[in-house]
Image (tube, rainbow, N blue to C red; front, side, top):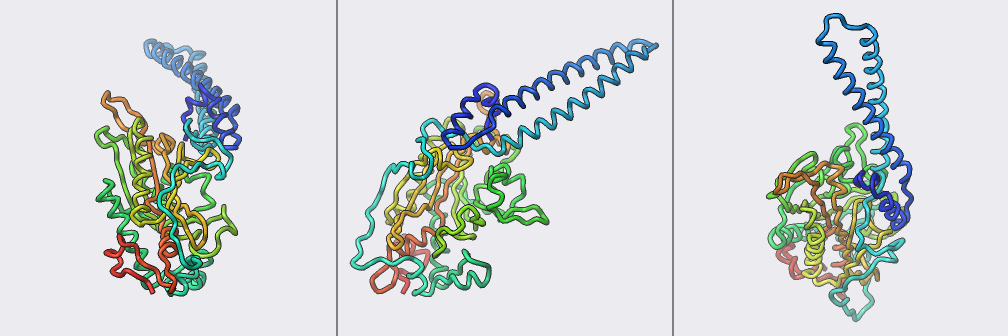
Length: 418
């Protein structure tokens, strides 16, 4: 949630944010609501002060004037009316603010959509095949490690079953990525619930704008996690951390569930865009002055996975029109997919500044004892299905087999699928 002080003192910042994201925000309505609320608060305070003064006066006299008593009753009624009006205005303000995305950092390139994203760097060369590389759905199906039909039979379209060495490869990949982030990148592993309450996804900013894309248990009002970002954000909801606690760096593996309502009809072949997928998530709680440095380190940590897999990758800086709802600045990491002939996004690393921490009331006490909001960052390290796709398509052989990347062999127990 953006700071109300921006609405109050610099509404032009919100106007610029809307234009850069190609969205329209009710800035004038917010300014007027805030002014009205503050005016009513002043009136309530004045009436309360008057009531307190008169109450003290009445307590010192035996004969209490009926007129004054009646006047105080009327004051009490006015206070209740104003309090209810303030409550309604506050709820209206909150509802509007919850639907306004974070303000892009000044360094983010302005653009309308992904076409305006900037390639920062490309590392590694695509493999040179002596044959025409095949897409992963053909490779995996012929090897008997991917069963899309059973996914449909058990659930519906966009679910899948991994078998044999395909399932082992996924498990090994998850374990290796977790171990890499723990031992080399200084993250603490945590295990999280896969269902979270409404307060958690509201605090992480997945509600209200992302609600129709999440799976929801109506009876208990619980949501299946769209990403581990949601429950990790909620770990310190309504908390005040010590400055000595920061930074906190967590890594977690979870399944993720998304209804993919925003991408109906897109990428229906294979496992590029599915309803359930596994992901290793990196997350940081940091001091505000460190957050953009920590963002660059987060990107580097995600890149290490691609580099160690020896798969060509590139890093993109997202433009304002392609930023996520909570992000002030983001980079995407993409792996080259030769069989599908495209770049696959496997990680989006974002600095959400104080957007999530304001919604979740996550604070810290600095050296002077002042309480400030922390900054939060998140990034995939990495998303499993698309990494599997990249491995299958980059390491495919002319005989239909797939070589296992060297770093994964200790985790799979085999060096080839054939």
